[in-house]
Image (cartoon, rainbow, N blue to C red):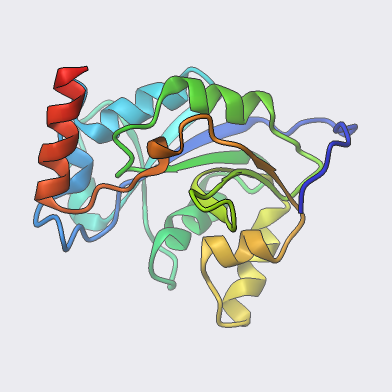
Length: 206
C-alpha cells in the first residue's frame, strides 16, 4: 500500500474540495458554519486549501447552495446517486475535472492545521491512486484528508458497481501512499454540540 519510489510522471494539477454537504444530524445545525477560528469552518478550510491548490470548491447540498449563492465561493452541488462523502468527490470529478487531482477535506476537522496540509501536498505521490494519512490506530487509511489522483475516478465508479461506495474501502483496496500524521488529534471529527464546546474552549485556551 505504501512506497518510497519517486514519481516519474508529470504531476496533474491540484484542485481543492471541502466536503460540506453532510446532513449534520447529530450536530443539529450545519457543521460547516460553526466558528472555531474567527470565521465559519468551511471558510477556514477553503482558505487553508487555497494556498496549495490551483482552485478550491465547496461540495454542498441544494439548500446550502441557495444560502451560499452570492458568496465568494465556487460551489459544486452533490449530484451523485450515492450517499455520503463519495457523492461530493464523484461530483467534483464529473462536473469540474477528471484530469486534475483533488485535495479533499471534510468540514468537521476543526483541529486541522496548515502544516498537515503542507505535509500532504509535499509528500504527494502522483504515481499512486491517492496519498493519505494513517488513522489514529495506524490500521487503516484516513479519507478525511486525502489527495485523490485522476486514476481514482474509475476506481470510485467500480466501487459503486461492487456495492462498496466508501472512500476508506477504496483506499484500502488500491495502490496508495500513506503518511504519518504529526498530531493525530487533527483528524478528530467533531459531530455534537458538546464536542464543539470542548474544542472551542481548548482553542481559546491555547
